[in-house]
Length: 244
Ligand SMILES: NC(=O)c1ccc[n+]([C@@H]2O[C@H](COP(=O)([O-])OP(=O)(O)OC[C@H]3O[C@@H](n4cnc5c(N)ncnc54)[C@H](OP(=O)(O)O)[C@@H]3O)[C@@H](O)[C@H]2O)c1
Image (tube, rainbow, N blue to C red):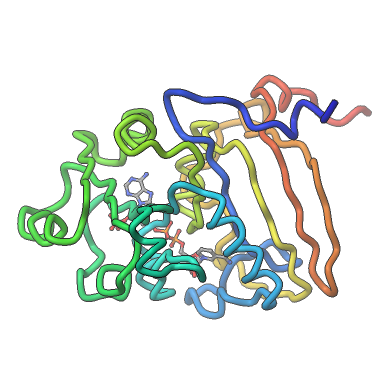
């Protein structure tokens, strides 16, 4: 029988969430100026596409989409595949800062969903309506994840959601213990810099006891990179500090 943590939990009120990131050996995901965040090998890119293809939705924050000119498409997108409408491409933006002129909106690909808040201006909201199949507006200042994820699961039938960062978006999901699986590609380089982002910035956990606990369930070394998969553990597990 497979190890229990390898099985994906059946969730009905939200998708199963996978965070997928490439990280340097010193734990950074980009330089301070948000430069050179694409430092993974072609094998890492192939892995990213494989994970995308297994998902019903791909989620990213507005900064990542803007800086990386990301489209959140897969390498198998074709008119035929688009007709299947998966994986949906999902933008997280509190204020609607991402222009509709960016490739994310301009490429042809699976439908777009937008998660936003009451802070979005009416003009940008109207512009987004021309491109998005659905827009979820939280009444709060930041995205109400419980309701937004329920909307994705129940209205759009998203069972598996891949979150591709960046750091701010990741941490808002880690903070709520909504990240079920973490895929990290450990890349053999040092980026350095105190202000270079890690996989999770934003508001930290208030104490070690509350920090999100994970268990390493798989590791693979391919050429110079290490592909790591972690599964979320129940929160109380974090309270068990090192034995002294
Ligand atoms: N190495 C890797 O694998 C990898 C992967 C992805 C990204 N990156 C790097 O990560 C950096 C970007 O990370 P980042 O932290 O600056 O930006 P981010 O998380 O991509 O985007 C932040 C923006 O997303 C929106 N957002 C995120 N969480 C929200 C929430 N809970 N409620 C409302 N809005 C929310 C807000 O948009 P608005 O401002 O529009 O309101 C916020 O300003 C870049 O350097 C990128 O290259 C690296």
